[in-house]
Length: 372
Image (cartoon, rainbow, N blue to C red; front, side):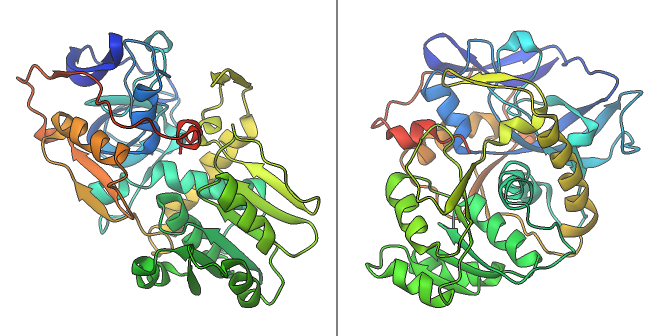
């Protein structure tokens, strides 16, 4: 038996004992040691995207317990790995979210990490790194490292978790990285590789970006993707055939004719069809193939060479018993330039945790549609 945080009727989260999940020939059974919280986790509960019986949570770090006979990667019992799962799915699909003591994932979609990185820190990376990588390398078509190019690259909202990864990945291929954030975050983002930072509230922000790019900006990653941010990013993109990555695939905006938009939704990497917000997403084998390739690169090069650093960690005590507090902080916009992380060993197994959903001010439509 294992402990998991299960969604029940009326958006209640219940700490329950469940049988160990079944794993297939290509899978790993993983004992979860740490999980990181993402906006998609609380939004799945708050907006009723998950059915009763589902388990939310995406990012995890843990130890390999069982290895399927056809699993790739030569994984061994006891190895430390990290990855993500599609949390919040119907329990009948047999896919368990990360807020659980045990998860199953195909071996090709997890990765090893250096002993110099803590499991708390590495648990912050799987979702945000693949989101940034899908946009930069898979959708825009920029070369994977160690290849390099000379290009200006704008990351709007660089202090977001995806933004921090986008800065580092763009820098890893030699881009001149321009980013926006609150002034208090500028030094931190420069430490990640940003060449120049601007206050996103500056009324002259567009002209400042154009000047920094010498009126030659063809690539941008909008980590907010709301109407105002996308307008300003588009105004800064001056090159013919400019490319823009957005992370709100459900919000449609009118773009200038010289800009091609790439809408990224990381759930496409799992290789099976789904319906989200009433929209059908077909299986996309190429997205899965890219994710498998990127996670190998992450394990073999980006992490060992320090080219991609994890987010800053804020630990919430109490393991799964602390998720209520973490959800509340994120709903109230009290999480900035950090990731909330839970240590599963701190979960009180004897606790009869059962709490209803926290009612805060309803988030905006953009928040509702942002799953990253």
